[in-house]
Image (cartoon, rainbow, N blue to C red; front, top):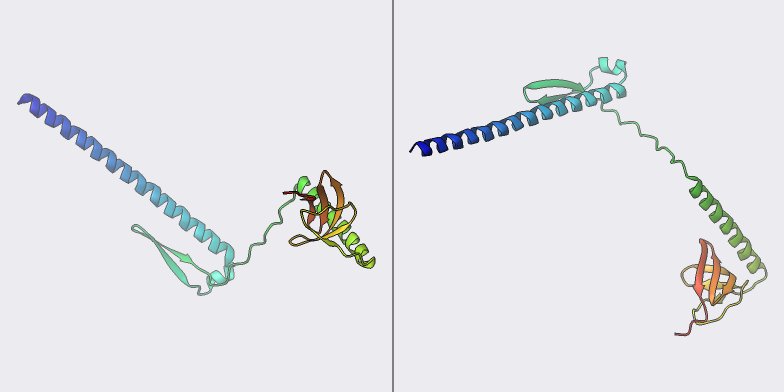
Length: 174
């Protein structure tokens, strides 16, 4: 019986330790929550203070009450629309700038070749993988549109389209 009593005392002691730990955790969580609420209220007050000039604060501005466990604070809220934030233009890297410049040059080159072919009234061939093409001739692609064949190496066409250079297959036997 003495062993049973000792065992039951140990069990009770461990239960009380567990409950004490749980209670301590709850108290800690409540403290953290209270601090978070206080910070949020302070931020809201600062934002409102920045938006509303001192003259408007003195006038009858609508007030909202922020309640946080036993404490009540009054926050002045201005009904005026919030000013739009200006979007900062992201600075482009050197690589991005070079890429844009290259695309711009390609676009200008394409436009010049397109105008030249229209003046000469050269009809572009409709592109097909199975046909053979010569370099420096215009083609018409179903999806990519009008293009100019820059080179033809090993049945690979390097074609200048409006949106950039693409490689197409020619003389396909399949």
